[in-house]
Length: 334
Image: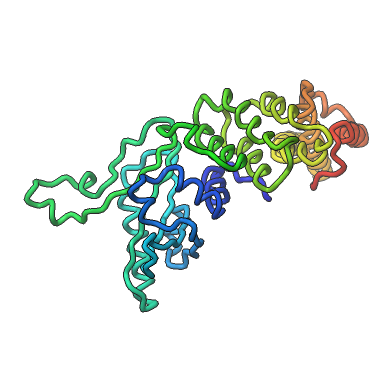
């Protein structure tokens, strides 16, 4: 599973986590209002490809759509449309309406009946949702004109307003929801202990794809989580699994460290004004970045770039090898 890009780590995490049928079902059973949930047969939840979305709209939406059935056993199709928001965007209700129209337009082209589409906004911003949830809130008009505004509203799942205890069942699901809920909040630090305690419910922390996703998100999704605290919580659950888990959390820090060292190396080469200096700086930058990242992961005070720049390439390579051996990492892709 790739490292989540920092620029869209929230959307990436949301799509990968909520895109799993079991997680989506557990979330819906935990959060849907009872009267809505009773109308649906959530044991049938099928991911639906969003081929109806044009390229411009695709860039603006999380693109998660599930098809389900009515609880009465009828053949009527019902879709659950998920959208993730980190901020209370006033235009969300209009954006979702466009999305819903696209779905039904595609159904008509496929000679299918129009269907019910339930728009679900999963929100995890720091403040309570305060944007319009209906078109009539978005387009204020005198009462006499209200009938000309489509009666359309959103179901907002504001995680900040939902108690943690609501989410029960599979430990990985619970940990996933808590990470997503608190990643943008100051409380994420104090919640780390609880999250890792849940992950260790069944014993030693195992590196499944879901755990890897959570670790990557903790690294890329927030600057509120100091590396030393995160590493401390990870180490509590490690023993023989150290070799497989530590590289996961290390990968992004190593790449960030390499980028920092790479820049220093390139700048040094430019100042010398020699092609060979730039090429040497490139190799030195990779090694310097890796060394500093490994040192941080091991709980050491990273050497300064200036100090490491004084060493030869062979000395840097030897130091990096020693640190990798100490960490229990055989190789890390360059």
